Image (tube, rainbow, N blue to C red):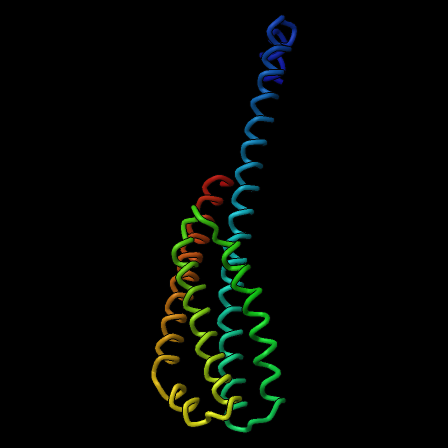
Length: 184
């Protein structure tokens, strides 16, 4: 009862309505700022997740290409070439997605560009070996295959993917901490 008795004169004053409006506006503003911050964080988190997903798809695609190449070179059967051809088509589209996900000005644009270039080079090497094999130059194809270039390139690709994924995971953790500070 005491609070009601204390507030009664205030509610009857001419300042009550403007103060209530100001408090309502402050509440709405704080709510909107919080909403926009969480929305922005959500967009950044989705971009980070997309980048990690693309990196995983790229890794899987290149491993499929290598495996299919080896199967085709060992058997010479078209069934082993088909997964490679499908993988090569998917890789071209995937490299475009990676480039689009990390446009110029993005904090990881240089890393993504290097990764795309490494993947293109690896794809070119695999294509070269397959062309030699199909042209009847099995020994040349095997010689190129037996060099360490492909292995070294794949290791470089793995390191580039790991750098990209680790950077995105670190950004996600930092983003999560910022969200927690905003919300709590």
